[in-house]
Length: 80
Image (cartoon, rainbow, N blue to C red; front, side):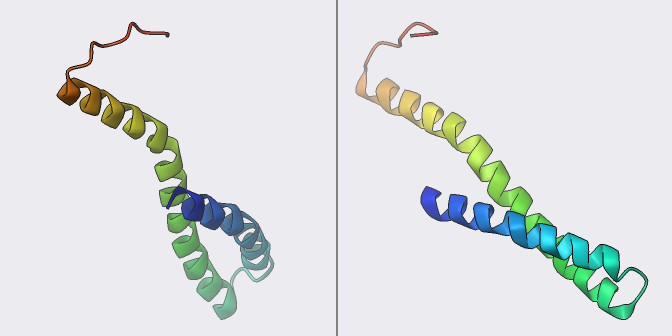
């Protein structure tokens, strides 16, 4: 799952840049408005995939701590 999210995020970046150039070059026309709507949807996907990749290490660390607490292992000191 993580690999898929990273791949989607990686491929959204160049598509977004090409679309940005297209929107800027067609500003004020009907095509520009349509491209801008597509760009907004792409930006939403870009932001969501980035947020998932940002939060994942913290979420995994939290789950690991929950699992250790359930197994009764002592907590490690911070920084180790």
